[in-house]
Length: 478
Ligand SMILES: *Cc1c(COP(=O)(O)O)cnc(C)c1O
Image (cartoon, rainbow, N blue to C red; front, side):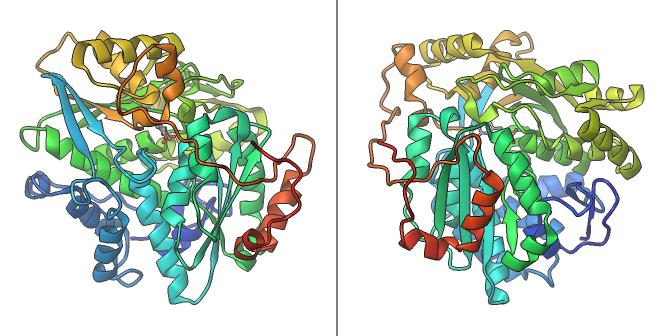
């Protein structure tokens, strides 16, 4: 399989090029040059297989044998899911009623669905670096769960250093401690006085600087990274196969959505021939919902919600979605993305808007809906859901008029991380945890200081060295 840019400025890239790249040199995102097709014969054969089997089969479709051998892939996948509660099935299912099934995607080391794709992603990068006797520096901006999932997946790997910057005010206590207390001398974590979008702008600048990228083997594991889309695709196929009675039955998947990385994987699966219907559930940050409704994408100010990993104003993977639904029309994608970058508004043609609405539907759950849904689900089914999952379950509960329809809500994070919301709702449950581990001193990227310089300093100091000599503390967190 070869890869290209969504904007057409790059063709014929190898998997290993894609592995280390954040953005393509023309500003686009990597996509495969062709979409492999899964016949119903193939789906039938995969039907009762565990998740790790599906992940291996899907990985083989997108990763060339001469870049990673099948043996290497197999080992890598086994290691990646070794830390999960169930290291073969990875995902577990809860049937709340006939038409409402929950797919628990959060049974990995950091308790969010991001572990599923990030574990193999980190190991692929590490393995690739090891083969060349080189070291990669991974840069991550995160609105919550990505940080801890990345840190867990990179922890202890020998050929990766990792720098994580997180929006200090937009993560909860549990999520922050998850990031700051993970121990690993290849890990460096910075709190930032800004939003995750502010962070992304700076990181994109660094990752677009080819000299820096080559010199330090810089890469990202944000949802712009193709490897995440790939392993999430395996997740959708597995969920489909576990739910459908036969390989032709249609299943509706309701997906808590932020930057659209997850739903982009769902769309990829549809194109590969898996019969799923996709509903993107968003929180009060309705940019994706408005885009699907009106065909116009515009940046909005960020609203803080309970579902903070979905608090986003620019859904970066929309670019991949446009590429997929336009059947790889790179000229069109380039034109609308350029327009978006200059005017901060993107207007779809009528034809493209129709294609988008045929591909996904959307629904909104604001904080009020999230609270009510958590409460209702707990009372009715004695099942505690996290605020992200609640956006999907909200949709399912108000659209339960087709009891015959197969529907799965993706549960993207464990409730254990969101004590604050259950305190407010007076819910006490043994799954809720508090994390009071003592946090180390950290340097804050303050508003007004030069973040670009701070990133570059961190990169040049090589985290491995940086971490062992704790630098001057400009701010201490208690
Ligand atoms: C990241 C995340 C999402 C949103 O996924 P996207 O790929 O950004 O759309 C939803 N729920 C949780 C818990 C997450 O961590």
